[in-house]
Image (cartoon, rainbow, N blue to C red; front, side, top):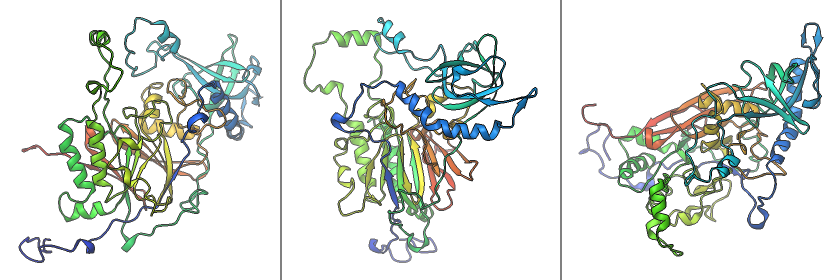
Length: 495
């Protein structure tokens, strides 16, 4: 160990590792909000329409209350606005407001019936970057159990997406459309104080030792492909997280890390879409009904397992799946199977530790929510934000995240254009409790913002960039909720 003067030849050359400063324990309680039923209890026979009716039923009262506060005294041309229970009960020329579910009629949206009719497709067409029609011919509908009402307005269709619940104030026109004057939504739900949530009351507090701060590191988009290109980046990341990189200042910062959250896309896409020629050649080959080593590459999963097993002795890890990981495609994605992690599996909830602290390896769902250091944290792998951005123009990821929270639905476009499980009795995507921290992984660039609600709620929004492309890690101070960005990489000579 170097002396305080920085001379390696002075002072004690080594230090007993038992006297070094250990990391702070992480007060951690995962919530199992998005876990699906097991085995025979998981059904796919029910209709997706039930989800829309369920959302409307659960959010209608909150939206009505918000609209009543805003429009009870509203008058236009001497006429006072009144509430209409069903969308088909509006009358031409009468000023009224109604609550319903938004449906966007967009010609560029994927349509399963069109896909079935296109039998000449060998492989599925690539996903569109946007569903917005450049000609401006997209229509917005407001629907409930009675039917649909076409909504018109200069900026209304650019503010909402399919699946969100809103109240619209306006009048019906001669052509049957509803000309909107104003809109409103439920806004943020109630937010518990730190350490005061119902689910966290029974969890033990873990005090900081020696007054050291606690920070949570969030990364996403590792994109491990199994090639040698991954080795240097993963080694640098490993050294930083374990406190072996650089000098004492960086090592002191690494000691403050109490948990690592990996927000999806840890592995790269293993099976790219084949061309027509390659697909035809593969189809003509002799079928192999057993294990085919040529069609499976275990190297990416093995590298991820090795990376995690080297980190877990020093820092607990929460792992969310992403759209490129070997998990179910439909949301909510279930935890990655423990069989993928033979080396890291022993760290999954050791019996000697409490489930409320869980100082090991925790593969979780996507989306995921839980309590870290008394704060309620909600996170996704990024699919919900990416799909919402296809409906709107000139909207940043942080703005999309704020919109979803204020609509009280973190996956409004599911099941329309985002695959999801057909929930029938309860929709876990509805926001019943306001989080303190909301992060989304696999974004193109880093971003942070603090938003406030009408009841004094404050939520920290964090857009986590793709690590493989940016080399960036997001650190969140769990006392002040301050956010900092750390970039890891190799600096080229002369730069």
